[in-house]
Length: 214
Image (tube, rainbow, N blue to C red; front, side, top):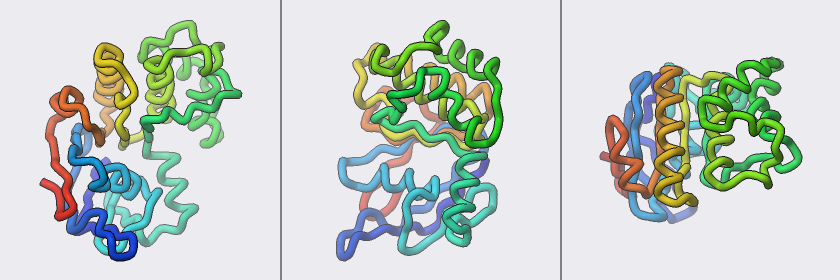
């Protein structure tokens, strides 16, 4: 999926979160976005997914301007074409690992146990499908989140500080799973991170500041 952002600006009252942000992400490209705390990296990622609003500018996914879509249309576009990995995992505690991973398929009216198991194997969680989230480590939970974000084969994956809560060795394994799976499925990947090690693995690194990106 191509992602094109043009002259995007976001404010909260008189506070400028970011201004005049323009970027393009090609299909299959891995772009890392870095910057100081408070410059709006997570907010920018939410705008890319149509989860947050902006004041001026445009966000286009495969030529579709998100601003002209209704909330329901944006939700359907996300459900079909976008995967999101959060720093805080957002794994549902009352569902087992396999059920958590299968959620995006369920929302699309699909059921594919074999695909779920294959995805768990691919991210290093073989045999853990029946476990509850509270029985897993932080690194394992993050891999559940990655598997869930990729199970419906999105064309765009957005990852917000996916290694922020992890030790360096676990973070490296999580990044291995994230990159290998997005490459395998040909998805574009936009990663927001404070980690120099994670950013160094990207095809391109962009620096976000209040005045723009570059």
